[in-house]
Length: 424
Ligand code: SF4
Ligand code: SF4
Image: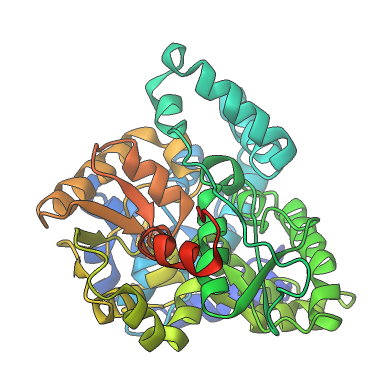
């Protein structure tokens, strides 16, 4: 696509990147058919090709309006369009740049500003979010349906493996605790630690690490998002240098997709560029770690998971990180009946803060996804991202868990008896 960027952005880092992305788009429209918001709303401007066109106009100097902002806001950033695009258009980066430029020129109404600011202040800070989440659970019956949906009961974490007194493994990995997951689903990382312990890997948490930066970055506070990323790098660096951790493990694919981009996002920061690149290289989704142990796990799990399981691959895993087939492969090797639902490439509507900011679209997408998942006849739904888990669970009685919790549950009795403890 021919472009002629306006002076305000031409030659800047964002301008150079946006121009390269725009030029790659041949306007074929293949992406439109797989876009969930286009499917739902039927407006070209609520599909990737239309949004790309809007961003192009703005970067070429056209005055954006509230309508432009709304079409960009309605994008889930699911990146399904990137998977579909035959020209390799990096839509996710382009929409981040487009949203920032539009927000600089189009003021938001007060109510929207308050909502977005509250999310930016609350979600990335565990010390604020955890007590607020607990208070919200206590007051759940008095709150709106949208908020009630976000306040699903949390499963108990169970015991973290005790690595004191010579029990530490030679193989060590870090895990990101993140921001909302410790309050909403503390069992996920504890389950990952127990399963990896059974496989001879010690999982550690760096206490000062927190939100991966995605919340603030994608709510157009890019500077604060980058600060979150720098804080994590500082927290992890001693473990990388001194403990020689093999990997930084992500149990939430939404965080993983962001941490894997640290090198790119901090490339222009001379103090952090090299470290950010190294951190990104070390970052792995949990589903990239466990296949190494597939045989051992299969032997331990054989015949222990008898329920039918539906696997919901989060967009941040299948489109953002382009990881497909690993979780299903691992579970199938262990004899588990794993099913994928129809249209499993489509977003469930959670999309970070999207389900709070655009509840109608999020709800419609959730209902479609749950109907497709129910049609598989599965007894349990498993996924890999805290946002998807809580969003889906809010609309169904079928249990929705992280896939590592499923494995942990199946291993628990034998590992506990092997250790002589009560386990989880
Ligand atoms: S983003 Fe890709 S698929 Fe969509 S219109 Fe452009 S080239 Fe075609
Ligand atoms: S990221 Fe998802 S919602 Fe946004 S344009 Fe692409 S396919 Fe559509």
